[in-house]
Image (cartoon, rainbow, N blue to C red; front, side, top):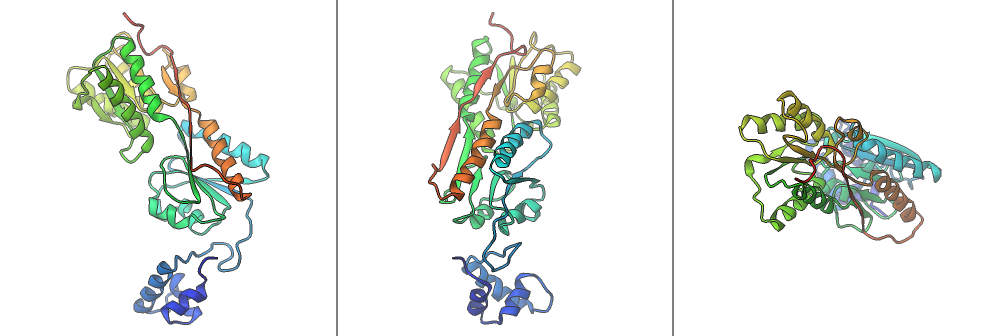
Length: 331
């Protein structure tokens, strides 16, 4: 059982009421005493509970899905997968944004155990915060990084394989000068896709040009700006691998504005297979990842853990190439 407010008060040498005031930021405690209480709480790994304080936490029958962005098209199928499995098990789902990082409502849900478990795809929530919140009876499933903890497991699509598939497809089409437009540096998804790109380029003895290694931060606007910068440098590559479809949409807009025709003048490939990808003209060649299945498996694992069953610490689901119209046919 975790430490109680009484344990914190005893270690700090203060009354229980004083410890409570200090931890809740009520302004009747001196800074020196407050610091002493906070140090004691950290030593004991004391966790305030948002619902029941130090009483035994009652079940909420609710799962939290913490996302760095609720608006992106990639997230809709992921949320659907989590939601359908949650409802089938008689649980509610709260999806919340981690904008604001440590001060976000999303972080409060896991720190204060306002839910029975959490699924996290939010690279702006630090490892430390997640590891401090995870404990037996409060499972956390990560979708964007691996963390070593007995109450944390990891579900991912095989992003590295997807990066290899995308790059090999461009090379098979005869391309040798290939640009890569990346997501955030902190994203494991991006790192894995880039590793796949590097492996395929190295395998074929192709040079990765630093000037064509551009940052788009997984947004449509970021892809647009990356291509504008690429065009401004003069010579353009033969193909561009965008690390997600949203950046590819923005990049294709910038190419169209410059009178550069896809795929006649340049080939483009994306990653994710969002709904919009198939409605472009020409439709977007991309790598499909099992976003619905990732969400469904993540919440299924939470229910297994809550029932006391043993699960593996990590799971990897397959990715596949979807060939459409933005990569030219081999000459």
